[in-house]
Amino acid sequence: MLRFLGRLSYRLYIITLVLAVVIVAVLALFRPVTTAIHTAAFAAEVLPSPVKPQPWLASEPERIVTEFTRADGSIGTGDIYVIPDGKRRAGVVIFLGANAAGADDPDVINLGMALARAGFAVMYYWSPTMGERAQVDAGEITNLVAVFDHLRQQDFVDPDRVGLAGFSVGASFALVAAADPRIADGIAFVNAFGGYYDTADLLVQIAASRAIDNGGGTPWEVDRLTRQVFDNMLTPESTSPAARSLLEGTDSIATARDRYAELPESFRDEVDSISPSHHIDLWSANTVMRIMHDQGDPLIPVGESRRMVRALQQQRPDIPVYYTETDIFRHVRPDAQTDLKSMLRGAFQLYRHMYHIVAVAQKPSRG
Image 1 (tube, rainbow, N blue to C red):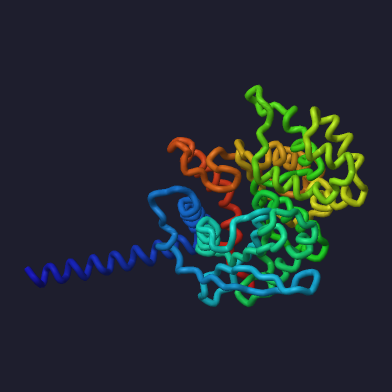
Image 2 (cartoon, rainbow, N blue to C red; image 1 turned 90 degrees about the vertical axis):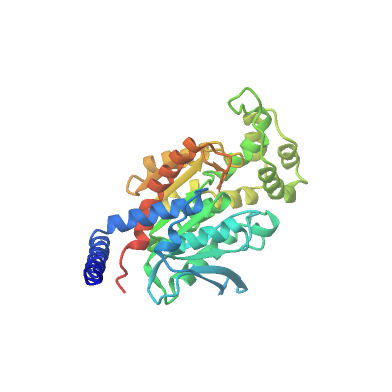
């Protein structure tokens, strides 16, 4: 009897070993299967899910504080999340924008860890002007270019597989940085979540928000953070009657446009410099554009991303663009109050959106 049980255990061991080898071989030979598994695990990790399988699929990432030289010669800092296994990985620079969550925010850490486990070397850039003081600083565009260069020069990064990602104002800054000729041809993808298309139009909409119907017969209720960033942009110009009028609010879009046109040309030029709408012709056809927005976004209206996608389709049909709308986020954070049916639908939408991004990470390095 004992001999029989011993032979049975040995056979079960051999069968298990063979099955494990077969599974590994299938995942290696059929990369879409591997990508699908890692994408599903990523979605479960960043959304409110009772099951978090990512730690079973990949090792624990390491968080590294890194320094780089900013455009003005000063030293900037960022956090890199990467699995320390000596492999060369795809990279992604993330910019969170104005009044952003900090380096120790649980959602920020969780996203960095989740992307690292999906196969990326992830670098967050922290802006002292935008992140800490809710200002919009056009100079951060060139700093993003420096951050992109810094990441792709790391020994553990494959320089041919590096992308940019941004949230809210950071999404639009990532899109503008992608037009910089120093890096444009080397950007594998841009993932823009909850950004704006045209800065001037957004300012006009905020100024005239009392006259804009939110769809329910009442004026658009501008979010407190959006209002703060708007005020910070216009306050330096408040000595002019036009700026004061915009800060106080206008009774119509037409009036807001007229007041905006009266602002100093230097101010309007700077506003245009951070508008994706003014950089479409400069984006590389090698860059895949992935744009995402929540339908009920209270900070930046979903119409901004819709306009961006339409403009891309009409003006740059040579650039691949993928657009996803969801209803499971509050601006760019997962909304834990979402009902189960909506969360499952949104999780599938996130999976489809992220699949081709995770595929970049799962692609073997040529180096």
